[in-house]
Image (cartoon, rainbow, N blue to C red; front, side):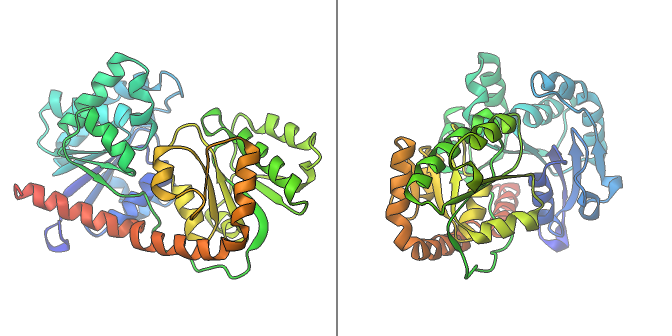
Length: 362
């Protein structure tokens, strides 16, 4: 799939997501790119993929039961895929878009090969909800010529569900940010969704314990979600509440400014694969404070280049205090690791090279 022999390649997923936009940027110029979105298109998507090469299904699925809406779009999607006749159909998120791609290939006898990218909960959570969901996830994985995972732990889970070849690479940065010379040593930043899965109350609990040790500690909480009103009330009622700011959803440049200013980054979800936000924070020189999950342990050695919160909030805060004197050195080590292992365009180049090899039967 070099520039002189580009083949038709379809991205299938929610093209309103910045993740699909990032894939489109990495693929542009390397393949003849098409896109099929179950929702709409993110701003700027049509600058990468001409509108004539996009299918917008506009299903607007609900959080629960949304896949029924998505499945109703299958005939329209399959007819479009047959007309495009791509060499590869690349589905993102297995239990929705992977299922669509698998059914379209099976029922409409499409020629293109199937590639599947797991995002996290589609492997780590959804297959455990019911036997039918586990079955369909397994079918998609088995039908895929190549799968991608962003963590070794998730890759093993995919193989246990029947995946053949799994290529593992972080959904990393498009380029390294410049180093920030003037970090605020007691500033903490958190930007995961304010939803139950991400356990944002744990972030406030750790900060409360830290604030007892550092009277000048501050916390900035970005992003939004259903728990935000309750979290704001909880913080406002606490003695340290004036040192917490909720700033809502941020544009990329504003978020980069907070990454650049903060010395500490807190991400404490109950389930996760390798988080792009964690990679971004490490690239900006933040010391990560993460929940005790297999994918997080692939990035951080507790007490060496960050904190894995294995105990209560007080223990996590104590671990942060213990690392404070080495924070600058830790930031340098983490930035070096990101530069060597988590630059996304380089990973996509290796991924496309592997697809070429599969086409040759290698």
